Image (cartoon, rainbow, N blue to C red; front, side):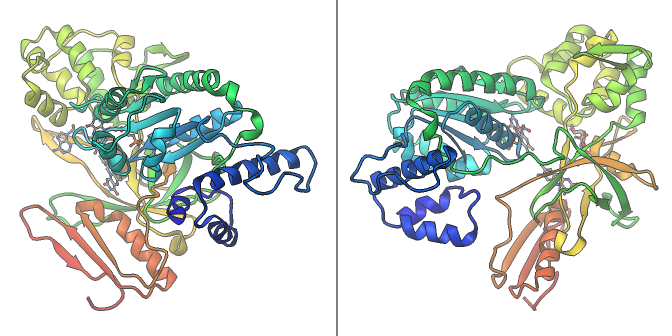
Length: 517
Ligand SMILES: Cc1cc2nc3c(=O)[nH]c(=O)nc-3n(C[C@H](O)[C@H](O)[C@H](O)COP(=O)(O)OP(=O)(O)OC[C@H]3O[C@@H](n4cnc5c(N)ncnc54)[C@H](O)[C@@H]3O)c2cc1C
Ligand SMILES: Cc1cc2nc3c(=O)[nH]c(=O)nc-3n(C[C@H](O)[C@H](O)[C@H](O)COP(=O)(O)O)c2cc1C
C-alpha cells in the first residue's frame, strides 16, 4: 500500500538513489508513522534553518515529535488540465500559498489519493472542460469517484472551484460546474463561490487565487505554525521564457509535405530555440502566439467601415485599431457573447433566433462554421472601435505537438502543421495560427513560442518495450518526435505507428523504424 501512495506523490528534488532509499524506508509503515515522519522532516528543516545542523529531535513515533505535521491543516490544490492552463494556475496558487506560510500540496487530479478526501479540510480544484462538456483525461477518475456512491460525506471540507472553459463551446465550464455542485451535495462548504473563466482567464484567475490564499490563511492560519510547512515537491522555478513571456524563435525551415493533389496542406516547420534555454520532451507541445492574417484584419475594418489607424485605449494601453485586431484579439473564433452583441446591433432576427433557447444546433453550427468577419458581412451592425475591441475575445495562443526529439535535433523544435483552409461565400478562409505559421518564410521570419509540457504523454522509460502509436490525421506529429527519440536512444523495442487519412479511406499502418512488425 505504501509503495502505491509514495509513487503517486511527486518526489520533487530527490535523486533516483535517494528516491529508492525513501521508498524502502516508508514501505509498510502505518499512516500514523508516515505522518510522524513528515513532522520529523519538517522539524529537521526547522533546526537547520535555525543553524543547528544536528538532529536534536526526539526519534521515533512513540514520542510526540517536537514539530508535528498536521496533515489536515493544509491547503490541497488539485488540477485537471488537458493543455496546461489549469496546471499553471494551480502551481501558481501553490507557490502563493507557500509564500505566506501555508502548508500546501499540489496534485494533478490523476495523482490525487481519493482516500484523503474524507480528511481534507480545505480543497481547491482548478479544472477545465474538454470535448463536448467532458472532464480533462487526468480528472476523469476523480470525477467518477466523486459522482459515485463511494464518495464520502464531506461535511468537514471547505472548497472552491476555478472552472476553465471557452464560451464558444455550448457547455461552458461544464466540468467545473459539475464538480462544484457535487461537492456541495456531499456536504462540503464553499470557501468561495465558483469562478468560471473564459480563455482570457488571467484576470479572474488571479483575483480568485488571491481570495483563496486569504481565505485559507484565515481558516488554517491558526493551526498552521510556519515550521509545519511541508513541501511535498519543490515549487517549480518559472523558466525564463513562458506563455506570458514567449521566446522569439527563428524559423529555419518551412516546407509543404503534401503534393498538389492533396486534400489539405500539411507543413513541416523547424524553429530554432538557440539561446532560449527552452527544453522539451517528446509528447510536449509548442505554444505559438500568432498574428491574424492581414487580409482578414482588412476585411473586418472594411465591414465595420472603421479607420484602422485610429487609436483605441484599453486596459491601460493605446494602440491603433488595426494592431488590436492583428495581435490582440481573436478574429477567427466566434463566441456567444459576441454574437449576442452583434444581434442587438444588427437587429437581425435570424441571428437573434439562433441565440434563443431550443436553437442549440443552429448556434453550434454558427459558432463552428463562421468567423467574425462572416458574421459582420452577413448581419451588418454599427460599432465604434473601442466597443468592438472590447466585444472580442483576447487572442489566445495555439498549441502544436512537437514533432522532434532534442536528442536528435538539439536546440530546435519541429512542427507538423495542417493548414486550416476552406471556402465560404466563395472566399478563401484560413485558420489564424496555421495560416500564420504557413506564411512564415524568409530570413527574418520568427514566431513567439513557449513550451507546454504534457506529462501524461510520454514514451516508456524502458527502451526495450514495444510502443503502439495511434494518430489520426496530423495527430501524427508527436509520433515523429517519439520515433526520432527512440532512434537516438538506440531503443530496441518495436515501434508501431497507425495514422488515419480521409475518413472515406482506409487508415494506413507504417513501420517507421526498427524491426518488422
Ligand atoms: C495539444 C494540442 C496539440 C495540437 N497539435 C497540432 C499539430 O501538431 N498540428 C496541427 O496542425 N494542429 C495541432 N493542434 C491544433 C492547433 O492548436 C490549432 O487548433 C489548429 O491549427 C487550428 O488553429 P487555427 O488558428 O489555424 O484555426 P482557427 O483560426 O482557430 O480556426 C478557424 C475557425 O474557422 C472556422 N471554420 C469554419 N469552417 C471551417 C472548416 N471547414 N475547417 C476549419 N475551420 C473552419 C472554425 O470556426 C474555426 O474556429 C493541436 C491542438 C492541441 C490542443
Ligand atoms: C478539444 C477541446 C474541447 C473543449 N471543449 C470545451 C467545452 O466543452 N466547454 C468549455 O467550456 N471549454 C472547452 N474547451 C476549452 C478549454 O476548457 C480551455 O481552453 C481551457 O483553458 C483549457 O484548460 P487546460 O489547459 O487546463 O485544459 C475545449 C478545448 C479544447 C481544445
